[in-house]
Amino acid sequence: MELEEKHKPIKKPLMVLGTSSGAGKSLTVTAICRILKNSGEEPIPFKGQNMSNNAWVDWDGGEMAYSQALQAFACGITPSSDMNPILLKPQGNSTSEVIHLGKSIGITTARNYYKDWFIPGWEVIKKSLVSIYKRSPNCRLIIEGAGSPVEMNLIHRDLTNLRVAKYLNANCILVTDIERGGVFAQIIGTLQLMKPEEKKLIKGIIINRFRGDLSLFEEGKKWIENKTQIPVIGIIPWLNDSFPPEDSLDLLEKKSRFRNPEIKVGIIKLPSISNFSDFDPLENEESISLEWIKQAQCLNQFDFLIIPGSKQTIKDQIFLEDSGLSQKIKEYSKTNGNIFGICGGLQMLGTILKDPLFKEGSKPNSDLLIKGIGLMPLKTTFLKNKITRQITSRSIWPCLSEINGFEIHSGVTVLDKTQNTLKIEPIFKDIDLGWYRQNNHGGIIAGTYIHGIFENDDWREQYLNLIRKSKNLPKLNTRSKSYKLKRESIIDNLANEFDKHLKITSLLS
Image 1 (cartoon, one colour):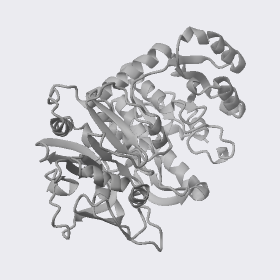
Image 2 (cartoon, rainbow, N blue to C red; image 1 turned 180 degrees about the vertical axis):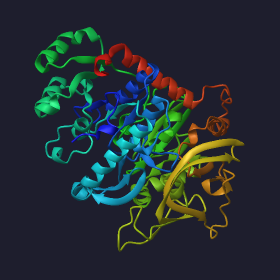
Image 3 (cartoon, rainbow, N blue to C red; image 1 turned 180 degrees about the horizontal axis):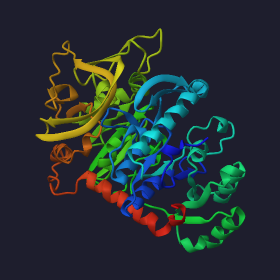
Image 4 (tube, rainbow, N blue to C red; image 1 turned 135 degrees about the horizontal axis):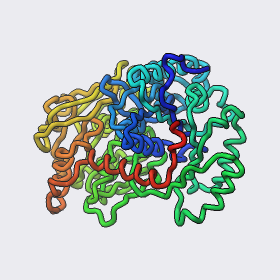
C-alpha cells in the first residue's frame, strides 16, 4: 500500500503523532512548517481527517479546519482544502457533518461512520495527496496525526494516523505532553501497542510543555532513549503565546493574558460553538480581557457581549432560553449594553428562526419555527444549501473600510417587517452581510455573517473606539500593529523557541 511511483514524494514527509489528544501536535506542525520555510524548503501541511467546528474557507469556497489554515500561513502559502481532505463537524447526538475536499456530502452517526465512509474517505485522502504532489512536486509534506495512533478499538479503521504514515513511508515524530504527567508511560505504552513495522517509522520523540530547568530532565531523556532506542529530539519548554485551541472544550481553560484590561468582553460559550478563532484578534489586544460565559448571570460587568457562531443555531437558541441566558442578554441590552453576534449569533439576535429541513438542531415533529432573542428585526430560514465563500466588501459602519473574511452558513436572513419599532442599518455595502442598531438605552446591537471580521484592523479599531468612548477612554493608537502581523510574529516566536530545542535535521533525509 504505497503511493504510485509517479506521485511519490521527492522529499521525505514528516509526520507528527501524539500520545494523546492535546499533546501539542498542531503547534508542533505549525512550528516545523515555519522552521522549514525559513530554511528555504517548501513545506505543505496535511491532516487527512480532522474533527472540528473551528473552520476556515479557502478561495474555492471549500471548508477546512482552521488549524490547517494556520499551518499554511506558517508555510507562507494559501490554504487549500486538499490540505485537510476530510473535515468532520460535530453537531451533537453523536452525529457529524461530513466534508470531503471542502464540500458537505452528508451527515453520519458515530456508529455508522466507518461502515459508510471509511472507503470513500481513504480514496479522498489519496486523491488529495496526488493533487498536492502534482501541484508541488518538490514540497515536503508536514503531516499531523489525530488523537492517539493506537486506539485499539479503532486502529483497523484508522484513516489519518499510521495508515497515512505507512502509505507515505513518512519519518514520524511522537509528541507527548509532560504537563499532563505520566510521560514515560505515555511514550512506552504508545510504542508497545504499535506493530514492529509501525514502530520503525518513529524516528524521534518530543517532550512538550516542560516547565522549569530543562537540564533536570536529562536523566529522564536518557532513560527514554535507552528503553525505546529512539532519540529524544526535543524538550520544548512551556510557551506563553496565545494560539487558537483545536477543540471548543479547550476554551474553558483559556485565561486572559493581560492584567488591568480597559475593556472586558464576555463571550457566550454555546454548546455548539463554531469558529472561535474569530476572537483571536481580540485576545491579542492588550487593552482587552475575554471571559467565557457558560451560565446565566448578571452581565453588566462586561463592556460588550459576543454571541459567537454555532453549528446548531436552533439548539443553541433553545439552550439560551432554557438556561436563562436569553433573558439576561435582553436585560443587558436595557442597561447601555453593547452586543455583537457573528453568524449563528447574528441569527439568534433576530426574531424568528425557521428550520424546515431540521438542519440546525430542530427535532422532527417539533415546532419548525422558534423565537430568537428578538433584539434585531431579522428572520432566518435554514435551507438545504450552505453558503461557503471568501468575502471582500466595504463597511459603512463604524467606518468606511475594506473588509475581508469568509462565510459559512445555511441560513438566509431577511428583515422582519412586522417589527416596525426596531430600526436597523446595514454595516456593509453588501447589505445582507450584517446590520446594527442603536439601542434605545444607549448601547449598540450589531451582527454579521462575516467570520474573521475582527481581523480587519481599521474596522476592529473603530468598533473598539465606540466602546472606549462610552467608557470615556481615549482612542486606540491608530499605529498599533495589525493582527495579521501579530499572528506572523507569534508564529515566528513559536518557531524560534522550537528551533532552539528541536533537532530535526536527521529526519529530513
